[in-house]
Structure formats: structure tokens, C-alpha cells
Image 1 (cartoon, helix red, strand yellow):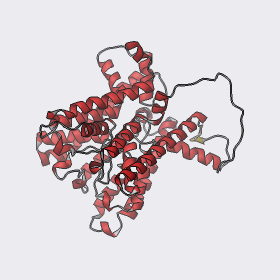
Image 2 (cartoon, rainbow, N blue to C red):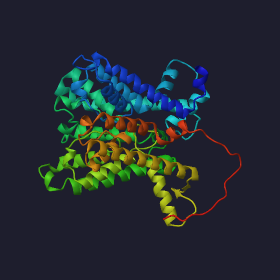
Image 3 (cartoon, rainbow, N blue to C red):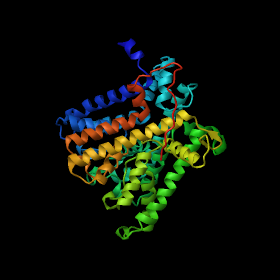
Image 4 (cartoon, one colour):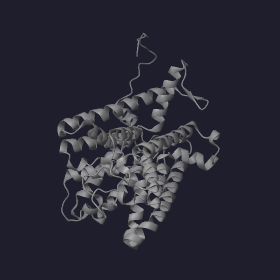
Length: 447
């Protein structure tokens, strides 16, 4: 059995690791003391919740605050923490803490798990990630506590602070605000700058990418010295926050239906709406009031997601950036795709195109099937499937009422979206070598 495990590729280990985490979480959430009622939870509800937590999505079929007991909530936040950092990262962390030697195969798996650019120093990088996560989550919990402790009391307020800090940093979107109104997320805090801005900061820090952290520590604000991966991540994040913010503030929240919202609250809501589709899943306003254009823009932001090697999901900013860079090179009739004075390898362009097609196929396929099964408008189903495959967690409120077929589709989308497109391909498709033989080349016309 051990020999068979050692023969597994890093992609297969990641795939199976997330599967094992989900099944373990499902079993624990099914237990009577995981629910407030003290009754067994159905396999479907437990599986959906465990998948959503492990894949840091945030879609739920049972309200986290009112359905699950303290033990159940603890299981959920542990699943979020492990899923956010990655199963392999946590496994290596345990090995480091126990003093065990980290072999070459584990280092390679770790490299794939955090999307590191090189194998050297990977164990040190893991320690850096764990310490950084602990410090950021601790800082977030401290800031949250200034609001939650006065409101809920010391013990409950402290628990709420820790829970929401971990959930926001891991881009999970799970919340405990069902005590105010079920499935309400953070709508009660839309005008609270501490809650809104702290959540936004945690989402961005968790979604910028671990390799970017390393560059920030080493080079501070010297952008020119950053790795190309970090440059694309920072530039992409700036564009994907600034442009949606302008739209949400000057278009969506300037319409008559939001006229009762004060200017300060409108600013907070706009920045929150620009950031949270980056796979976080928190919400401060009623999204059912959004126009179809706003819903479509949110879907696009969800599908793009965060950066590679981060706690965020989606097809990733770098994937979309590579597609855009390649398109620009074609428009300019340049032989190579280049950005920031660096040329992109052809394999990177092919990988980006493959990931893009996988996510689009899963997104549209899931949307159409759910729309047919449930008899719901396609746009509503597109929003829900984009939220699932990009591991976001935003919802228009239909998830709890979906049939078992549709819920299982969302479960599969969350799982496939979290482990990543290339991980799935490399884990399931064997590499076939034809030596130096190549098929004859022939041109075709496209476009």
C-alpha cells in the first residue's frame, strides 16, 4: 500500500488529499453532536457543507450559525483552514513540526500545491506561509473583535472574530450571522467600515498569492524587482478592483433603487462588491436587487478569481492575463507573447488556454443542466454554477432549495474548481511519449 502511494504523482496526491478531507469532514458533520438539534445530518447536507468548506467556497444548504453546533462550526472552520492553505501544505507542516525529513517527492508535491516557481527552499517557503497566515488571521481577529465582542460578549465575540477572520483570509465566505437572519451574510454591517474594510483586506491578502508575499518581504515597494508572476498578480488585482469599483459605485449603486443608501455606505458597498467576487463569497447588500448587467459582471469576476498559489479559486488572474497578452501579441502580429520585458513560454500559453476552456465548459455545462432540471432562468443558474466552480460562495438564494441532482452538480463543480484544471488533467491522463516522432504539419484557417 505504501509503495503504491509513493508511485502517485503530485497531482494525484492533491486530488486524493482533497477527496479524503471532504469525506472526513462529511462523516464528522453527520454526527448528532455536530448539529444544534442533536440529530444525525443527512449525508447530502453534510457532503455539500464539507465540500464547500474544504474547497473554501461558501455555498451552503443549511445556515451555519443556526443549524450547526459549536462542534460543527469548529469542524467547518478547520476544513476551511486546511482547504485554504492546501492539504499538502498542512501535511508538510505537520511533518516539519514532528521533525520528520521532507523527501524530494514531497517537496515536488509541495511545489505543485502552492504553485511555486522553483523547488529550492520549498520547505522554508512552507514555514513562511504558515507563519504569515497565522499573523494575518490573528490581526484580522483582533480588529473584528472591536465590533463583535461589544455586540456578542467576550467568548462569543472572540469566536466570531476568529471564525470570520479565517473564513475571509481563506476566501471561504462562511459566516455566523444567521443569528440575525438566516443566510444574511454581512448585510447587517454594510455601513460598518471596520467589518467591511477588514474583510476586504483579508480577502485581498489571501488572494494575492504566496509567492507575491515573498517578493513583498524581500523587495518592499520595488516593483521592478518582483518576479513576473507577482507583477501580473499585482497589476491584475489593481485592474480587477479599480474597474469594478467604478462600475458598482457610479452605475449600479447610483440607480434609483439604492437612493436611500448614504454616500459613505455606497462607497463601502462598491469596494466590497468589487473585491468579494474574487472568490470570497461574503455579501453586504441584497444581490437579488442587482440588474442583469451587474449579475453578469459579477459572474465574470467570479470566474477570473484570485491569483495562483493563493487561498482564492477561479481560473486565476494569471490565466486570463496570459490569454489577453497572447491576444494582444496576435493583434500586433508579434511572434511571441511578452509582458513587463519578459517573453512567455508557449507551454504557458497552451496551459492557460486549456484551463480557460475547462472552466468555461464546466460553467456552461453545469448552468444548462441545472436550468433544465430546476426550470429556473439560465442567468440565475449561471450565477450559481460560476460561484461553485470558481469556489466563491455568492448566491442569489437558490442553492438551499435545489434538488439533489443539482446539489451534486454543484458539489462536483466546487471540487473540480478547487483542485484546479491542470491538476485534474495531470492526475487522470497518463503522459504518452512518442519519442521524437511528430505528425506532419498543416495550416488551417481560424477566425
